[in-house]
Image (cartoon, rainbow, N blue to C red; front, side, top):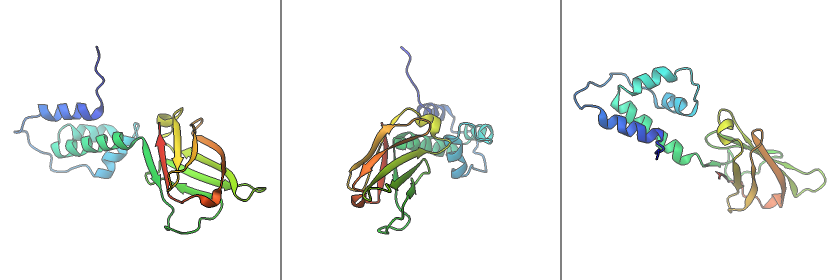
Length: 173
């Protein structure tokens, strides 16, 4: 029976195989670049970064920890308005903290307290999330949106706009 191995497990095994005597590289990769390589499969510096990471224990440890954190956090995200407690103008457009999603709420022209909520998946996350079911909650845990991502977005009607607490959580099933 084949066992599925994730990137974190593979990096952990690689670290264990390294000898304590081997020298460390003097320069280390910036955490921002490590993160970019992890989330962008076609990053232009990917090959150079991975070549460095397999030779440098501190960078490998950082890379492994980031990979584990990304894997753990991949199923949820949070969006907060820029000024807490401030009134948001219509339409409300709120990006999530890690830039994965854009939540947009538009008020209906005919019914002031109803409208449409849309969740858009930003590049480069679209291919990984396409076809998955997502839920958007407000700060009171009210489900504002539940649906399947098609062509990078999902929309549905929404009522009681005046009761939305402007802190949002996005969960991917």
